[in-house]
Image 1 (cartoon, helix red, strand yellow):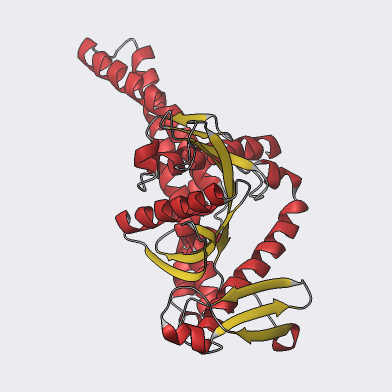
Image 2 (cartoon, one colour):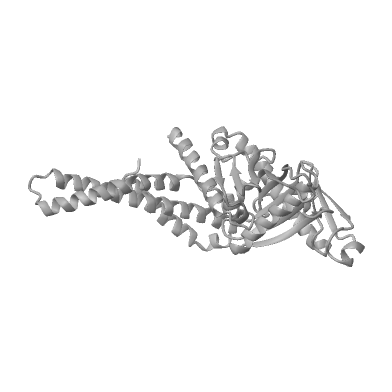
Length: 361
């Protein structure tokens, strides 16, 4: 129950966290400091939301008392009625804000991401669509001040990509992009189609939270590292040296590769970033599989086999099937205008988690 005693306890906890974070030994422990900072920000957000909610409740209670008191003069009653109406209108939103703030923070939300896009069914048109998706995310990153870096590219002969892997760095990147995992389907008339028939093809997207060495331990003896000659863009140097790297994580059979950088050392570092992200994702999926309620509270499963969105070019229409969202501005979406979609997905996810949290109380 949210009451004044609860708020007082929050302030005590916040003060304790401030004291702990100021200790000399904590500042040098990056992992512990991150954990404490997440808890601190969570408690601060809850306290702020709870403070507003309790203040509105107090206003409602005081206004009702004034209106019930026969000695209250007419002018004061008029003010009390206005304050009561205003507070009652704001209370539902304030209560929802408390429920949102109470949701436990997700450690991965603040992480950078690694995105893999692969052409699916549809042949050449699927590869072209994979390239369109890459451009869409590139434009989003550019307009939002995020850093995008290519890691591995397998171009298609007709344009686009058979596969493209890249990283995106910035504030709360995973929180914004995590709902993009799944199958993206496109409906349009290919340039080579002489009869004007609409074709359907698809590409799969995987969004991985990038993790550091402190998040996951990978033993050197569990790795098989191969070098090979890179192909594709990059100039003569790329084609004449064994600079590309393929790493196999023996215990899980996970294979990653990188050839976009010109040096073997840089490609190995990039491949290890992808490997850590994939192993971390596997571990998180195993944990979530054991937590059925948590899994049900998410927007989709994040499985690449799940059809999440359709891009219909003839109608300039985008449909996100998970939340029944339809927008008739596909041209703008493909140019990186993704905020409306990301916000809708996040808010829907929050609603589901609030419902799950309410049931468990």
